[in-house]
Image (cartoon, rainbow, N blue to C red; front, top):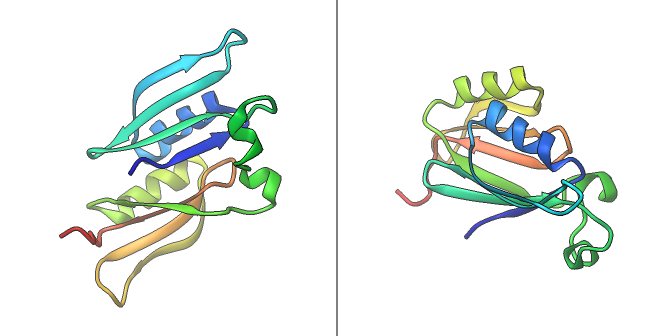
Length: 130
């Protein structure tokens, strides 16, 4: 599965996701107005796709953003080795860490945060595939 998110300022979102969370930019396509029509970012073998939230885009009729909804409507969980170091990096880049790193009853350690546009991300050492 590849999660897909919409951002009001996709270029700033890409910069944050790279700096704050450690994603790598794989592909970015811009429309004629210079807005991000489609982007692919990778992280440890996984991928996140995103685009600019634009009123006339067919996706905008079916997907809202946290800003429009008033709160996140879902989240993305990503496995990381060093949860505390990752949380520090994300916080330094401006993530709103609302659930600080904590050991989990089911195993591993995790934290949750909001990116600058309010999308929820959780990072943890628990790997449900292992």
